[in-house]
Amino acid sequence: MRVACGFDHAGVPLTDAVLSAIRSAGHEPIDIGCWDDYQDTALAVGRAVTGGDADRGIVVCGSGAGVAVAASELPGIRATVAHDAYTAAQCVAHDDCNVIALGARVIGSAIAAACAAAFVGTDFSGEERHVRRLGKVQRMESEGLDAPLDDPLDREAG
Image 1: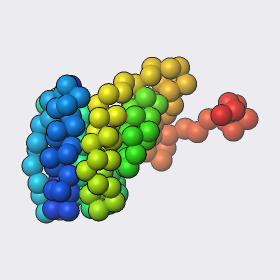
Image 2 (image 1 turned 60 degrees about the vertical axis):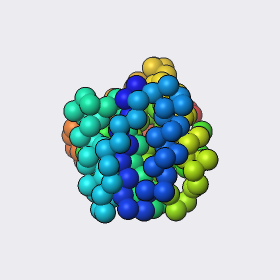
Image 3 (image 1 turned 45 degrees about the horizontal axis):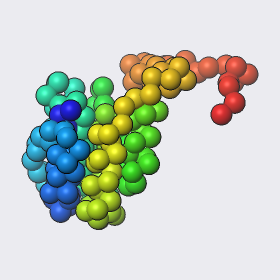
Image 4 (image 1 turned 90 degrees about the vertical axis):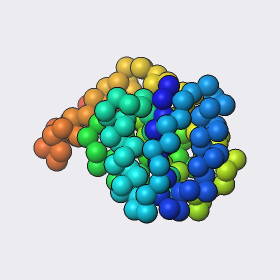
């Protein structure tokens, strides 16, 4: 798997940990570089993922929040902040996330490495309920606020 990795000025301290963790997991990191503004970081990684140059992406800023918000605005990108290995794996297994965001001022190198390894080490489950829910997310992306809601009476438990 090829993983595009981008860092803003605050994310630079996690560069080596993230790239090394991806290599150690047997995947190819693509260092997209560093920008002062997190929006540029998210855009560069998003372009690599949606353009087919990378299969997934990792974006890093100070908190993880800014790059996650910016990346999520890009069509075809499903991004979330992941500051623990469980979230980094679960967002792929259940939500088919293709980008995770890390906060260099929130987590250290060891946790960043664990998150990166969990992210690249997990596949989308393909379970019916997750496929159905992903379809709803994709309709929201394409139809925006006009996307239909399910009838509340038809909701499944859990």
